[in-house]
Image (tube, rainbow, N blue to C red; front, side):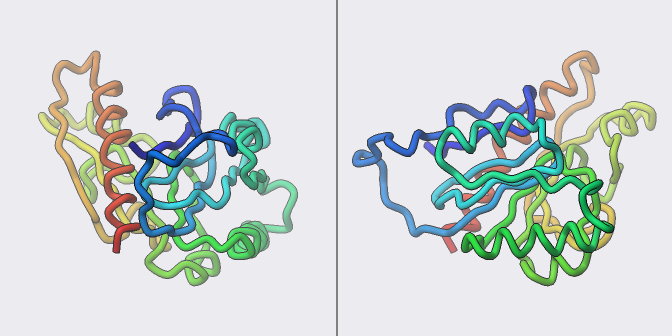
Length: 204
């Protein structure tokens, strides 16, 4: 079973492995170096080796969990850099020095700059709580409710320099009703299909 960690309290995927954990009983998949990144943190590995964890917030819970597991972890706060280009350039340098092959985002609310994406071509993946191209942006669940649609869903997609415009990798629908449980049901789908997609990407 793949292991990973959280971007915030609502993304509790389970325990991150300890550096001393006995892995002798686990299969030995082809290793691919993964970074999890951003905003409330990011996340995980599945059939790959987690190389580093980054966030744009020093208080991100995942940074402390990564450090406790002996993994490189760092916050890249925008306020500490001249601009977003400088921040993304430093972050890309840091990730590449750690041998990262694939960057997986969850909860990242900034557009990555072209300079960052050029360093990881077709190797940045995001999960979004709608059926893109419907309801891109920061409030897709609220937007779906306001639009009165019967069905929304979850999209895992490659990241480009647009707003949730990258090529779709996988989508899964979620019925809007009952509305009271919509957020919980969408998160459940996100938590399931993002690791599945990353595992598939790492197997190739």
